[in-house]
Image (cartoon, rainbow, N blue to C red; front, top):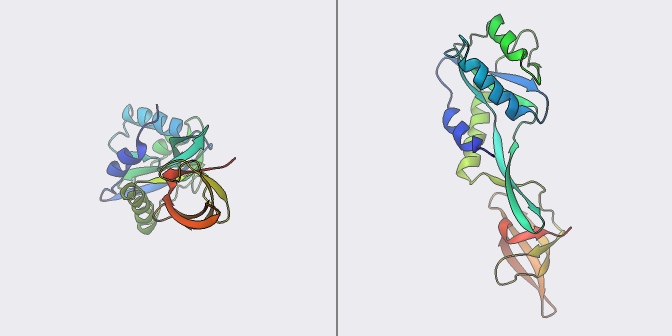
Length: 197
């Protein structure tokens, strides 16, 4: 039931002209439910044309479980949901509708919601675009230099090695593998190795 929110939201998230973005503080772990509920409530209210979108920034991550890589989505800003409002019209009624939603704590700025500056919005949306262009996949638990890993793909399958260098940008590792008693450097991508537990 995992939706591809990154791709859908990135397409939707391009800032509209004359809109303002507000940050909503929500119970951590309930961000998706809050987004779904707000989307439904706003579509049935007179604020349908005022609220352009409810945006939940997420990133794709993978985790190794039982020897298999499992892909999932993780909230990029845990505990927060963004709302884009036409002409910055945050009326008391709209604020009450949003704050009255289950699992919503308050807007940033509490009683007087403060909108994000243009630079902050552009930085957030730019980061989401970068993640989409780069494939948007990162490791839940990052690799660390000196850590022992197991190679699960390629010619060195089932060998263990020690990480000598980590390149997060290219998602590659330089690993030292002992072959016939000699230390040999091997370059591998993240998907070819797994952590040893």
